Image (tube, rainbow, N blue to C red):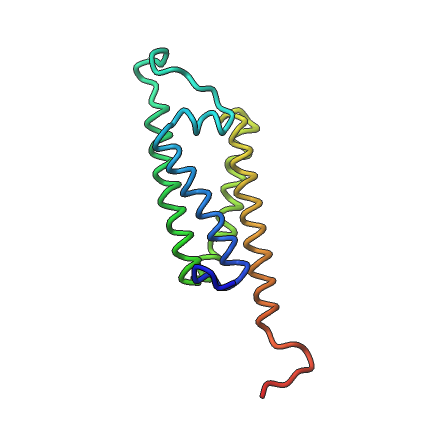
Length: 146
C-alpha cells in the first residue's frame, strides 16, 4: 500500500478525498455552471443574471478553496501527517452539520445536504481507518516484544 508514499487506509481516505476536492475545484474554476449543475443547483445563463448576481464569483472562490484543500489533503497523505487526519474528522462532521441544516432549513439550496453527506462519509471513513490502522499497529495481546 505504499504507492505514492501513502502508508495505510487512513492515508488513502485522505488522498481520495483530496483528489476529489482538487478535481471539483478545477471543474468549478473552469466552468462554474458545471459545478452548479453537479450540485443540482439552478444554472442561470449569464445574460439572464441580475447585475448584482455574484454566483459565478462565489463558485469560483469556493472552487479555489476546494482545489487548495484537495492539495493539502493529498500532501498530508503523502507525508503521513496523522495529526492532520485526526483534526479533519470533527471539522468535517461540523461541515456536515452546518451544510445539512442550511439545506434543510432553506438557508441554502437543498443540494447542500449532498455536500454535507459527502463530508460526513469522508469523516467517518477517515475516523474508521485511523482506528483500524491504530489497532493493526498495536502489539497483539499476549505477545511479547522481542
